[in-house]
Amino acid sequence: MAKINLPSDFAKEIAKSLGMSDKWVDEWFDIEEDKQGYFVAKLKPKKYLEKDQFRTMCVLVRDLGGEGYLEGMKAWRVPGPLAKKPLPQANTTSTPSPMDARSKPEPISGVVAETKHETVKEIKTSETELGQIYPVVKDQFGNILDGFHRKQVNPNWKETKVEVADPLHALRIRVHANAIRRTVEPEEKNEWIMEARRLLNPDDPMQPSQEEVAEALGMSRQWVSKFETLPHRGNDVVKRKFDVWNIANIDLEKPFGDADYPGAIPGDIVGNVLLWFLPNGGKVVDPMAGGGVTEDVCRALGDKYEPLLYDNMSLKNYNYRESIKYNDIEQGSLPEEAHGADLIFVDPPYGPLKEYGFESERLRSVLKGLAKASIDVLKPNGYVAVLMQNYYVEGECVGDFVPLIRETAEIFESFGFKQIFEATVPLHGKVARSDEHMTHIDRRLMVFQK
Ligand SMILES: C[S@@+](CC[C@H](N)C(=O)[O-])C[C@H]1O[C@@H](n2cnc3c(N)ncnc32)[C@H](O)[C@@H]1O
Image (cartoon, rainbow, N blue to C red; front, top):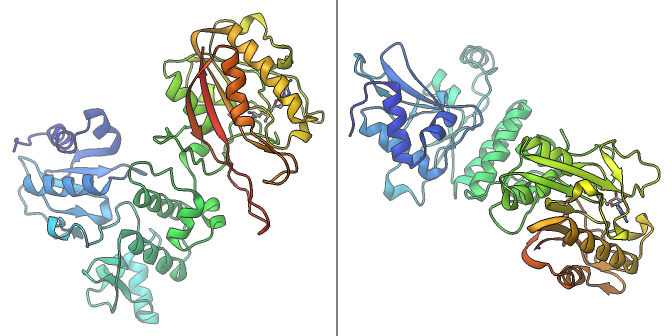
């Protein structure tokens, strides 16, 4: 094991052990020397480690002469060359042994068991005045699920034991124990939700839907939706790693596109098209730009994208933003400035066609105009990404079925495009209202190349 003379040596060892870059370590941890000469690696706010990374950190720190995870500090520390005193007995979590790894739930990093308000002093006062109202909750292995501070105040605080099946179950108990005992800050609720996401799908925490997260936590979907402040609700885009883009919600808090536009799509759909097909930037054309989501996502991803927006302004009572220029794509052309486009993103009116004064025959004609204009303006090998749903004449899987997904592919192929990708991008937020027929949420994103 290398000698640790500086905090930066500790950072290097962390990077090596976790198989991450120095930059990643920099982004995840604050690493500093404390007054006692120990190097402390503290997880930055809203940063978490996966289960295996957590375990690796504990092993590394042990090997370097440090203690286990310092629960209250969200940190690990190892002695530097000047450290003299032995490490004080902090509230540490010991390294889980590989034998235990299957059955023993991991400590839930990043989830604060009690708020800052619930200081040691307040707990002491409350114990004196009211007694020990709420027992400390422990799992069958002795891990504290709820009540770290109460145990700190009084190691003999009464306990109750619950059998925990897995880390998700442990989290659910923690959430409910806290929710009945005290007022929980929205920020902490968001942390629970994020923790549930990581436990449900460590590879792609954004993949589980809000319904799945709600079920895992034993809360309602509305509760999850209310307290979840997803990164993609801000101006970030979460890169999808599977070809089902289960994008949980429209960006409610800080939307991409105009907030009052009636048919806006989540920014993550456009964002993922750009991240996967045009990562180095380029000219992006949206011929049916609506509320301007494509423009906002381009801007959020940096100067490298040049968005050009068009629409025929068919929603009569809506004021389209100024950056959108009039163009009727059914005519099969786009203005001169759109020539040399790298990518065309288009979200045609596929769902309630009537709202746009459409029938499917009209949509076919629009799609032909779109395919013609696209082949004319795109650079060689350029892409066109089309969002599309099949159509039922009477709505919601009722009435004649019009296979618009297949027809769209056929139209683009007839203009010389080659389909290179298809992802399922279900509609979110619809409620099934009937036992008589299915609710229609299937939707696809198709990418064609010139
Ligand atoms: C589903 S909306 C697009 C929403 C947009 N992606 C967003 O997230 O804000 C479809 C848009 O296509 C436009 N549109 C319909 N027919 C058109 C046509 N022939 N030429 C150009 N735009 C058209 C409508 O005015 C509407 O704004």
